[in-house]
Image (cartoon, rainbow, N blue to C red; front, side, top):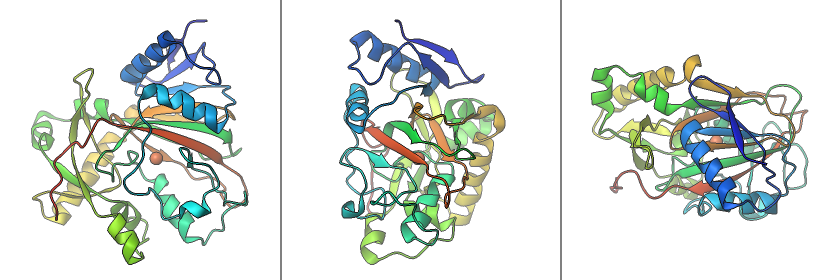
Length: 296
Ligand SMILES: [Fe+2]
């Protein structure tokens, strides 16, 4: 059976059929999916009841998995429910119980509700994120995606010239600050020191430009902070208009891949105290830093 892709939205996002992700893929299947990612930025696969090991093996077709120089969460490895190589995006603790509403780790995870690009707070940010829906809530919990290529194309000429060479500072401290979560231990604060990224990225295959926006942005190099934050807020508003957004309603065993270089995403609210949402993520890393890092 050949891999086929059907568009889900006028500007990006496709639905893939004709492939079983529990099995090793042929070179042609990998190429078709990779080309689909280049074109669509987001790909949705249905009915993929895969194990963590199968998800990891599938993800490796698209490059090395992300091994972060710094952790993506304040949770300690010893508290982790899942094994190495797979990220736990659930509302469960290591014993499989729903995390309590006043848990500090849960407050931190709520940052996923803000529009962001995965690992933009790392010097080498993520390329593809691959998210598998093992248990999905019956209400809420959609994942929304926004196409940063279409958002870039729709900027007026003056703004496009203005953003061209800007460098932004990204940190998880900035995204959590927006939610009023500001208390950290010294070692957590050190782990989340800001990194620098270009605001405009160019896709290595297509040469197409896109906005590299994320809730993790807290400043623009050389700009006064209020001016920078007001501008970034304007750009975020522009980039997440409905015409650039695909909203994914999860069905059990969906697997969704997105390109963090060309899209942003956020999770929507759900009944996290009463409903289990067990989503598991693998991540591949992009080729290198987008900007030179200069010690602050
Ligand atoms: Fe994310």
